Image (cartoon, rainbow, N blue to C red; front, side, top):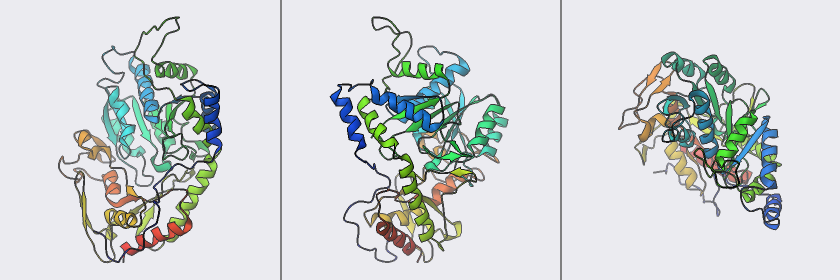
Length: 426
C-alpha cells in the first residue's frame, strides 16, 4: 500500500512511460505508399529508411525488418553460420553452443539466441554503467575460452563500455552482436551506438526514441551480410522464375507503410533526444537531496536519455519482497522502495515500471549460469536471493525503477511526479 501521506489529485489524462510522438511528416510518406500502391514489403520508403538508418548509425548498410527481434535473430543466424558453418535444416546455427549475453535486459535480447539453439550464459552488470561488465566478461572467457559469440544490450539509452566489450571479444576471437534497440542516437567517444558490433540491431517499437509503431534494422558494414539478411527476410527465395528455396527463410521484411512512418520520424531524432535529456535533468534537479541516484552516465558517452531511472541507496530501502508476480513492502519513515514509489506514481495516473529483471532470475533461465567478477552467480529457484557474491544486476533490480519519461509530459506534470516521489521518503 502507499499512504505515508495522501497523494495529490491525479492527472486527467495518463502520463506514459514513453509513448509515440508524431509530427505529421509521417502521414505524408504513408500516403505516398498508398497513392503509389506500394503497400507491401518493397518501396521507396523502405529504401530511404535503410539509407538514413545506415547514415545515422555510421555504418555502410542497414536492412529494414519488421521488428528489432527479427533483426537480432538474423544477427544470431549470421554469426552462427560464420562461426560454425551452415547447420542441418532441423538445427539452429548456434545449436549447443554457449553464448555470453547481457543479464539485465529485456528477454528479446536473449530469445534469438535460443531460436538458433544457443545456450545463454549471462554476464553480470557493471554498477558504474548498468550495462554488461567488461571485467565479468573477461572472467567468463577464462571459464569458457571456446565461446565465440557475445550479445550485448545497451540499457535505457545510456551506453556502457561498449568499446571495451568489443575489444575483449576481438581479443578472444569472438563476434559481437550489439543490441542497440534502446540506444539509437546515443554515442561513445562520438561513435554511434549500433556501429560497434560485428552485427547490430536497432528498434522502432512504439515506445522507442523514434517509432514506426513497429520495425527494426539490422546494421552491418558487410554487403554480403546485408544481402543475405534481405534474402532470409523474404523467405529465402532463390533467383529463379518460380518459387525456388534452398534454405529456411523468414517473413521478416519491413512494410513500406510502416517505413513511411519511420522515414517521417527520423528528422526528429535529435529533437526527441534533447527533450528526453531535459526530462532527465529535471529529475536530477528535482530529486536532489534524496537518497537516490539517477541512471549513471559513463565518461565520454552521450546518452539518448530514452528512459530516466533511479536507484535507491541501500540504507534508504524499506523492507520489500517480490515473488514472480507480486510485491509487498512495509512503509518506513525516511525510507522507501521501488514498489512504494511506483504505487505513488500510479496514483497520479502516471506510468513507471521496475528496472529490467535480470535474465538469470527469470523462471526459464534460473538454471543458467550468470558470471560476475568473482565467478559464477546462481539464483535460488524459489526466491530472489543471489546465491553468489556481487550479484549487481539483482541488486539494481531490487532497488531501481524507471520513471515517467514521455517527451510530451509537461514540466508541471513532472514536478508533481517529483513531489510524490519526495513524499515517499517522508
